[in-house]
Image (cartoon, rainbow, N blue to C red; front, side, top):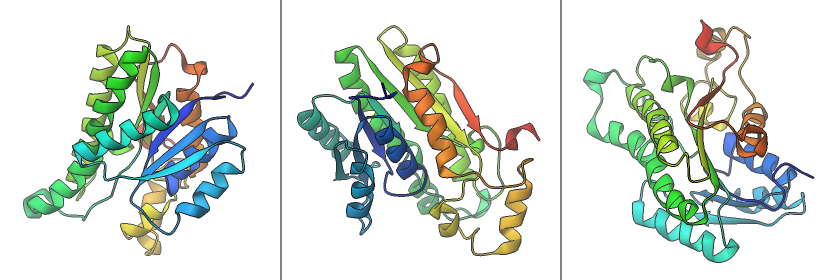
Length: 253
């Protein structure tokens, strides 16, 4: 028996990086997959990769920062599959680097609206359904920056700290309702996000980031996916309200 056999897994930010790796890992464990993301030319290719595992996969276009849009998408998933057993709230952006005293309101809100408000929007509607069925698992994607500061990234740091607080609070609220809620705190993972924020394009900057990890390398998306499968499966049945740090020792420094 595969670990997620016949489960329905909803993943935001699922077309690349960590989200994609988690989707493929969940499919290998027998789950049907719903990918929510901004539409791109990657959709068909990613869906094909997932369906190679003999499961059903669909894509829904969604901006997680839009409360009503998320509500509509979640209802569509329920109408299609009848349930959401597991949700991975993973969608996030890096934002523009800036010191706090120079950060614009637009720069701040762009990151917070997706990385924190987006997680709330999804949890709000996921939990409304999971409470009715008295079962479910939610995994929120935080970061090592949800535990410590990082210069010129106050928007990202604040949002990821907020994700942990939201995770812990919701875990307390739903602990007796058959719903487990946890967060993952990855270190720096070798994904397209690092290219978007300029790290992969500058060898010196990339090496400085690598050196922050005692293991002296970046993480792989598949390593985060392994942690997700553990938290999503019954193997973690007595774990809720916690953070799983997958960071190459980053937070031990």
